[in-house]
Image (cartoon, rainbow, N blue to C red; front, top):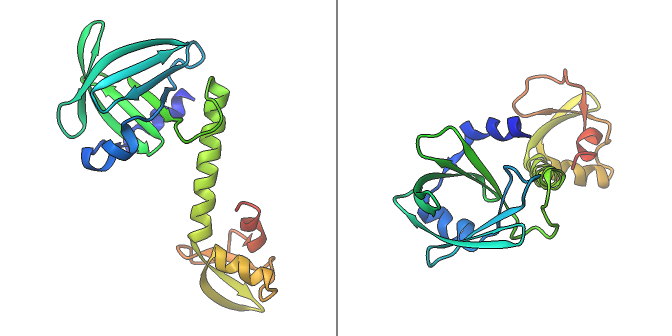
Length: 196
């Protein structure tokens, strides 16, 4: 899992105070993924600049503050640490200590009903989240299809699903992505329907 996490680093979006602070940062339950097998740590950044860290039922309160748009400072036992904040998306926060190659990865558990206590829980969370996202992307993406030797489209997956349901199109018709030039992949409507 470490390799997967570090592979997302080049694609991170810098923290933007105006976009992220109120809706995606403050009062969210951020579960630290790094070392979750050894200890479950949850970070909650409060609006009064208090940082509440719960680790294995032990609660520590410290301070945090914004330096500029995507830098913040956190007071630790060793003093004040400068941190750069990033997002993969609204549920994955990444913090990087200034002048360091080490990253801390967090999952937003605020809107997730199942507890995240170990590596297996993290994997379930990520799998469910990204399978749902992939399904939504497929549903809105456009495809051409061939029926009775004639090409039709482009149609979204939702539109194709409705056509199949209404028996206007055969589920075994070949389809191609709008960005592809031919049907060499031999993908059928039914293949996508199984993924959505």
